Amino acid sequence: MTKDEALRMAIDALKYFAKSDRVGYVAWDESRGSEAMNACREALAQPEKEKPFEIGKRVAQEGRGISDLWGAVANDSDLPEAQRGYEDALAQPEQEPVSHTVIAGALFDFMGYLTSRQERIVLSAADDASPAVDAIRDFAKKRGLSLDDAQVREWIDNLAQPEQVKPWVGLTDEENHIAEVLNKTLGLQYVADKLQEKNT
Image (cartoon, rainbow, N blue to C red; front, side, top):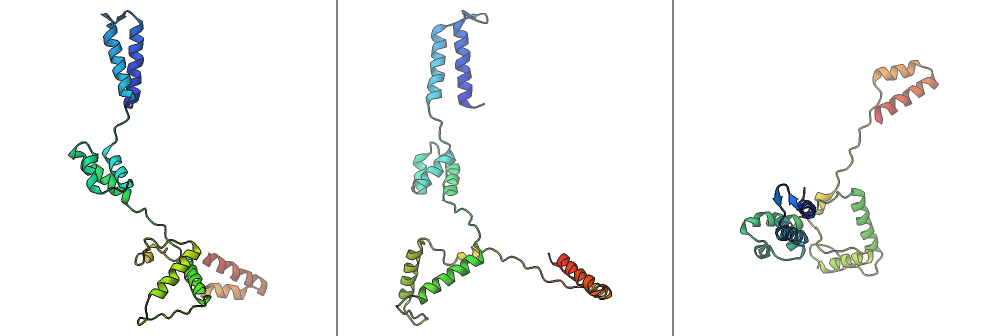
């Protein structure tokens, strides 16, 4: 039962007792009963106190520094929980793996863009890299890609593992002998069925 449910129940009970002259064998005190009902209504009207974890998340989402937690929580004992909320809000969601075919497609698309340009770019360790960076920016703009926070070193970790290709399995000597013994039509069907069974 929540605090709000308990307060509503208390108000209902107090209203019930207020209607009768007596509560059990004790006379009903109108002023104390009304005072208790009003106190419950005031408590019910107050917003729920924000938990330290939620305070930490809110502070992070507002773009404030972790030091702002000291002013945001009521007690120093709430700081560890608020810090967990802060760190939780800033944590990067786990990235979905990127298909190798998507990366390959992006590389070919970029090379297609480079080879369709009139301007020539020379790329080597001895040349200035800024024309290449400009080409990347132009390509990104053309494709609507954001280069903010580009994960230059981390992208390879997000590649999906290539699908494991099952090695081809041929017929055993015994299965080849059975195929030879059967007539041509049945033998070919037997070979096809066996190979399909082994490789799917």
